[in-house]
Image (cartoon, rainbow, N blue to C red):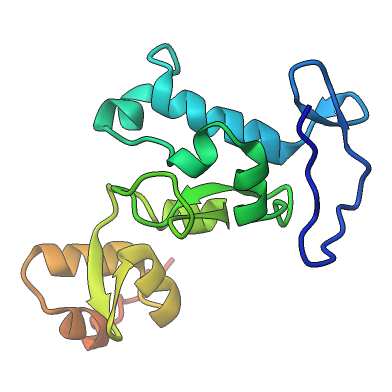
Length: 168
């Protein structure tokens, strides 16, 4: 059975034992990193996986370094930073490989979806929701202004006259 050997004096906080299927275990549970590795492979190669259509069905696959080696996967990505982190491909059209995969939070992953409307802002392509967060202008305001032909600069700078307060 394969053991994980920490590199560069990196310490693994819990002692890992290996079950009959080679699953790294902490007590009786598989580690989150191992589960993420299994799920990544299932999304790409198992046509019965509910997510296969969006991954393997689009031609995405796992690199040769990781496909058969959890040890390599773990060595490249390291431990999951927190329970709020999961695997994220940085380039959505890229494969699962070193340099294109990172541990990310749900918010970071939501900003990295194919369905996001990306706009160049401050020299970087960003989703409208992130620009809204950065500028304080509501995302629907930005989106609707861009949709009717405003430039991003105007969408962020032009103020709409304040609404009159209703008298009761």
